[in-house]
Amino acid sequence: MALPLSVSGLRVEGDAGRAILEADAFDVAAGSAVAIRGPSGAGKSTLLFALAGLVPIAKGSVRWGETEISSLKEDGRAAFRRAHIGMIFQDFLLFEELSAEANASLAGAYVRKRRHKIGEGARRALERLGLKGDDARTVATFSGGERQRVAVARALATEPSIILADEPTASLDRAAADALVDDLIQLTRESGRTLIVASHDLKVHEAVDCIIDVADGRLIGEVRRNA
Image 1 (spheres, rainbow, N blue to C red):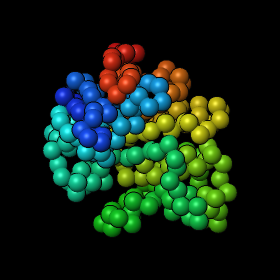
Image 2 (cartoon, rainbow, N blue to C red):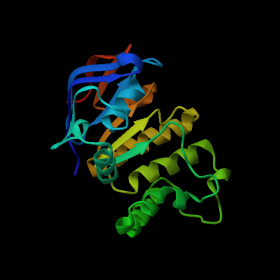
Image 3 (cartoon, helix red, strand yellow):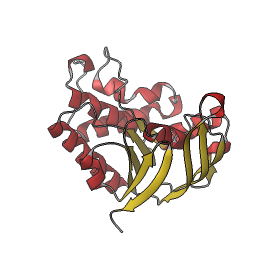
Image 4 (cartoon, helix red, strand yellow):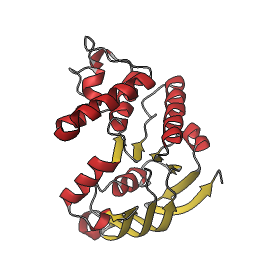
């Protein structure tokens, strides 16, 4: 089940209490696809990590559905991520010596009660993304596009209600990037997940329902593309 997002009065601080990100208020409907847009260093990744509970929040509220993750302690935020969030990072963060399936099902090593289900989810995601399991081949031999698809499959393996992606197409050539964007949008549409992507990519901006603009660590506006 997709979860709606509500953010209000958000402030993330760096050294000496300096604000590195501020957002007055914004909401994302459950099942929406949203892009965070802005120049390098604007605060896109910081906002994404704040939504995931990966950075401390000095002030304000980040609420997914009925859960205000900004009020949770670190172990509570981690538990929420395991249950609800699939993360796709700009750096693929794969284990080179492992196969695609082993990388995609890695979460099962940390959630033993769900290991079998996560493994099945990883295999389904890999097949859907055109990467059937091949244990004889490690990701060290994969192209950039294939590696990113493994990272996407890993995010989808737990069947999360939320997908957060940080510049997922940045390391890909245009053809691979376009294919990945199409896959991400289609996968989230079909399953009703909430997708939020921090990206410079115009292809991403054209595909989503809403764009949130960030500049100099502040949210400066929203563009609703689709009703």
